[in-house]
Image (tube, rainbow, N blue to C red; front, side, top):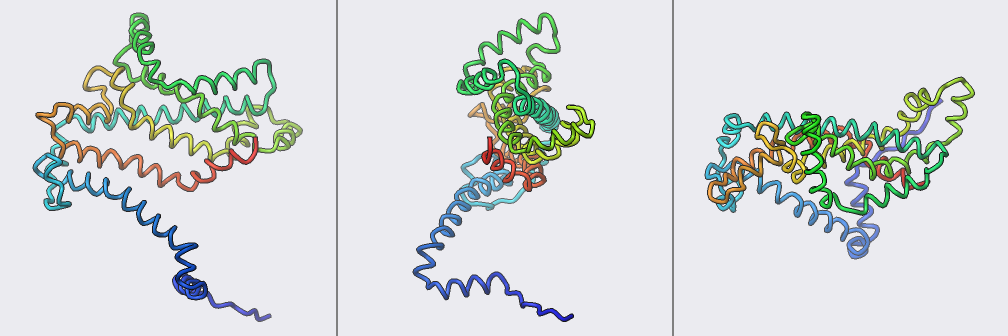
Length: 303
């Protein structure tokens, strides 16, 4: 049986036909301004990136010589990174950010599942408490964190000042509340009938959680993990307070140390390090991009 195959039109051809049918003035009034705003946003966001890349390729090591983009092209700044502790800082940052992201996902998912599926005494109070705690900025806790780590270090040295494990624990505690709320709305979109059907088949709560629920909420897990990784990767104030020795520094602390002295600041080396440090975040973002839109919007549909 023969079937008629409709010819497909190229996107540019369809766009031209729509523009011609609508008229240029109407198209500019209804759709054209959106394209203009998009172009302005791309230029506004892209210029700092071009500027920092141009600075990293400049031999002078200053930002004043980078007013003319790519007037000099040299990889000397990138070569000098091997003579510093830059790659050690990269390893520290990746370890801290990765463990924090995984821990945040596991802890937040467990808490969100409990608040979404179980009814227990103190459930509403717990949700309200988490919400109220998030209203206060983390800046208020710096003095308390510093004094707590000093006292804790006298008992358990591995959790005192200058400990990467202590820094990870601080990050995990600070991100639990907001991520629990973010996952809680997404967990509410999963029908409870799935849990009941699995219980009828003999599945336990653990089996339901690990084999069914977590697979269905994969988008929000990816979003929370990505946001946690990005925020931890570039965090400076808490890392600078906790980490004392140069060998334990993260990228944010190490790069700041290169330009903290205005007399001896090497902006070319700083720019080269900043460009390389953006690669892991960009790679992770591209890898998880298919989950981002669904993960950020689905939780607001129900719950």
